[in-house]
Amino acid sequence: MRKTIELITRRDVVFRALRVALLVGTVLIAINHGDRILNGSVAQLDFLKMILTYFVPYGVSTFSSVAAIRGSS
Image (tube, rainbow, N blue to C red):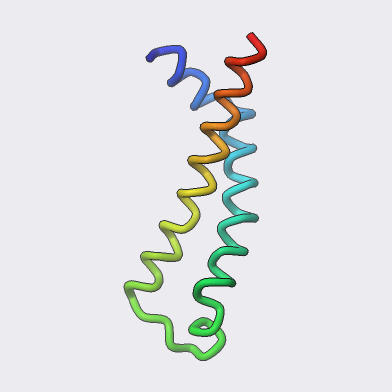
């Protein structure tokens, strides 16, 4: 478990996951909420959903990076 936490918090893993989350999350928000953003009809719940949208690609990228690092060791 300790090794996993070390890998998850590695600088290169975190920065890669942040870049992926920013790119993929933004695309997903544009697809899922773009019409409401353009119409100016974004509700409070929509803002929460938009923020949470970034967590999915962050988690997937982190998981993939950790799995790749472990596979190459």
